[in-house]
Image (tube, rainbow over all chains, first blue to last red):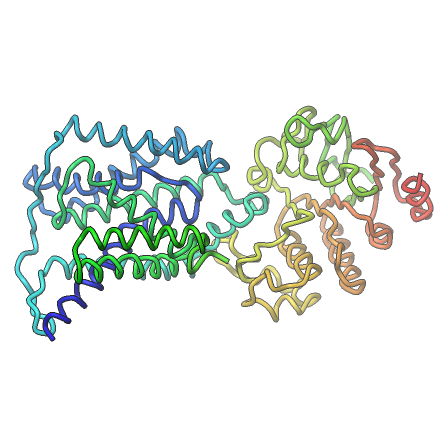
Amino acid sequence: MELFALYGLNFIYGIATLGLIVLGLAVVFGLLGVMNMAHGEFVMLGAYSVLIVQGQGLPYFLSFPLAVLICGFVGYLVEWSMIRHLYTRPFDTLLATWGIAILIRKTVEVIFGRGYQSVNQTVTGTVDILGVDYPAYRLVVFVCAVTLLVGLFIWYRRSNTGARIKAMIANPELAQAMGINTARLARGTFVFGVCMAGLAGALIAPLVRVEPYMGLDYLLSSFFILVVGGLGTLEGLFIGSSVIGGVDVAVSAFFDKTSGYLAVLVISILFLWLRPEGLYARR
Amino acid sequence: MNVPELLSAQKISGGYGDTIIVRGISMSLAGGDVLCVTGRNGVGKSTLLKLIAGVLQQSDGVIKLAGTELRGPAFVRQRQGLGYMPQVGVVFDNLSVQENLTLQYKGRSLKRYEALFASFPRMAERLTQKAGTLSGGEKKILSFCRVIAETNKLAILDEPSEGVQPENIALMAEHILAEKKNGRSFIVAEQNTTLIEQIHDHVLIMDHGEVMYEFSCDKNIREIINKHISL
């Protein structure tokens, strides 16, 4: 019983963190069509902002505004210098952002070094849920992830800005004719997406290894989730995270970590082959 | 009557990339004037309208609205007082009718559409429905409502009557004439001679991206248009 409860908790925790990490890419790739290969690097920048904050002896929660500040600044610079010219050329965004990813990784390596960095956990201890002693910080991450995802989901459906973003994506010419500055709206959306990636990085930093190359894992799983779930909807993001996260956790639990990763790869390849639009694509 | 000039276009040319479609067209429009642009399919009517609206940038020529030069992309020109209804892709299919009408306004109020809803009750009935579920004619009406309710000085309508039922075309004409009385000008690309007859002050017949014939307020427009278009 307790074992099942533990697996169950790990399962929903895994899905929530995956959803959190992929959220930024769902905005940048799913909505704007920019294949952001630097997505994982923005997650990494978020994680390093925790390191900076703790290095100064400041409280952990200050790393969230810092993550938004750093990612917002870098994201704005990247959009302004490169991405804005490439919205109609998706393949070129892949090459450009891959270059950006390398640049960010190397810059961080120069400043902080190649090695693993450890981040102190500020919320320690365990909480008793269903007879399982569960790490309290995982619960914090879970609650933050769900709040952020649900909040954004409702905002995107109800708000005027959400409607304008949908309008810009569906028919940019008409959106412009209605007085919408699509260039500015796209920039805002891009920067918002990379800031979300940074926030995710700051949240998960105490639970993962922090090093310049950490972004690569997140990049791959994020793309897998979007392939399975489908682009352009938050429903797809939920479903994709559930499938990828669920399979990974379940197979890893019964066999080992490598088998879990293999299962995720096989599913992603099957989806790309048989159902490239994903389970819940934008209609 | 001496009405000041609202729109002037001098020898504008342009098209898609290097392909020039519209060649050196000039026009002048006073406040409260309706200019109808007609001609066969593919003669450059839509391109001409897109060049004025800023959806395409002219390669040559100057366009002025109320004395200020129109430059830059469409959203800038919209803010300068120019409304535009495209020929295709007239609404956002993935958004509701209400969102289509209000997403560009801060307050999202439907108040400005009251008079239009009185004429086109179908729109008011379908506010929550996705615009993609409307028929082609209904989409045109939705887009028409959106442009008419704007407070622009000049509205550019690209084939507003295409696929619209005759009784609704008549209602469109009523709204255009009412707005015209308020001093708003229109440029309307049309192939529907009945609508042109009802609303026009000037008619411009195009062929091969150029003005073939131009006239103002003529009684026999049907004959004139038929004569020039069937050449």
